[in-house]
Image 1 (cartoon, rainbow, N blue to C red):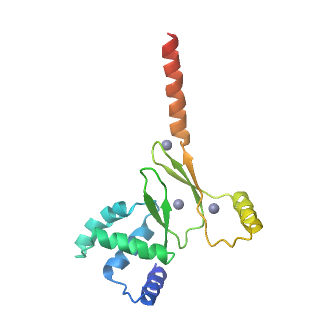
Image 2 (image 1 turned 90 degrees about the vertical axis):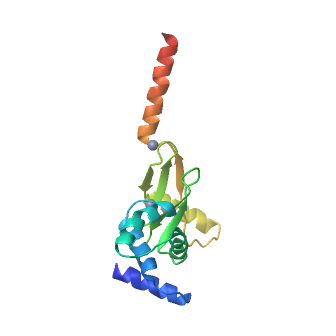
Image 3 (image 1 turned 135 degrees about the vertical axis):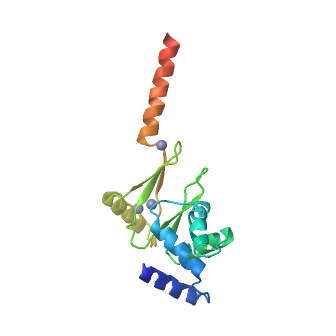
Amino acid sequence: MKSFLERFEAFLHGKGLRLTNQRAEILRAIYRTHRHVTAEQLYEMIRDDARTKDLRISRATVYRTLGLLAEGGFVEALDLGRDQGVRYEHSLGHEHHDHMVCNDCGKIIEFHDPDLERVQDEVVARHGFVASSHQLNVYGSCAQCSRRERKKGASESDGAEA
Ligand SMILES: [Zn+2]
Ligand SMILES: [Zn+2]
Ligand SMILES: [Zn+2]
């Protein structure tokens, strides 16, 4: 953890900024959680905790710091569309993965498939493109939600027949 903080401090230095207690707290919070959080959720997660430490962290500071963390490659911003908005997750020490997003319950499932990654690399190379990163989001219904939908559809048609 200390090294992430040191790296963030070095990044901030390069921009003529300081590692304030607030910024350090926000970095710690996003590295503590393994969820994909919106800026608002992260703000709510740290607000009370920060207050007990006599740290005042405003919503604006959380938004701005997440912007800096994304710029420095410390967090990844995922635009999950619909009402999910932009979600953040820490990226250092977190292997590359892609996401499936359930449009019904909002569940986010992480997946990694070496074959898929390899095919993608080949397609990119064929275009003479040099990739620095990628995001793959698959939208739809998770297993539970699609099962529930099917059940509902079945009982509705049963009703029509009766
Ligand atoms: Zn991928
Ligand atoms: Zn679902
Ligand atoms: Zn993820």
